[in-house]
Length: 197
Ligand code: GRF
Image (cartoon, rainbow, N blue to C red; front, side, top):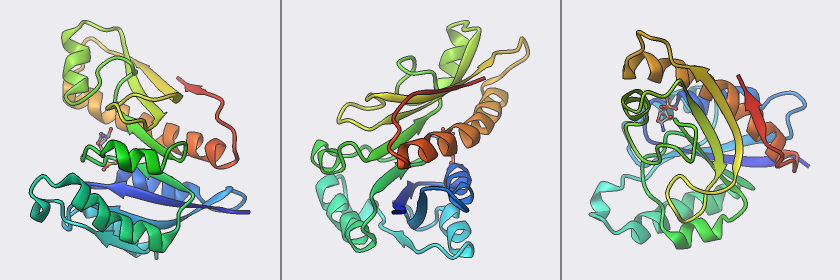
């Protein structure tokens, strides 16, 4: 059986592309939908160019009605019937009800070594703290933000001249390696943790 994967994005979608491009050959999953909360998200065009169905559900007309936004998004998800939902640079906080519906089948990538630096501005916070190492985490999504069982981490050493911009770029490269590696295992039913250096 081949797993069906839907990917939620908000922006350029480089993590989405890394996931999509990994799902070939003997990979146990295939992409069935890329959906964004912003119709201008650059990743939508990139996904469409690869022949993947796309959907845009603009969150702004819902004016903070998160359940209403999620109901509209869920119409697209229900039609695509994914087995796994991957958040890839998806910048909306999901309600506990939505997360519960996808419990055990929803993954996120976060640009820090969780549990450090949940939320935003992770690279600047790692620098400010004087950390020697930084990286990214793929975890299962639970109702608490950037929480949930960790499925994989990738680390790098912070260099003396690093800025939040150079760190972001280098961590993003790690994200593109880590997320596909975790998804491949997860789609095969293996939830053992991956650590990349
Ligand atoms: C990445 O930096 C990711 O860590 C963060 O949002 C960005 C998404 O980039 N959560 P992309 O849309 O995958 O290119």
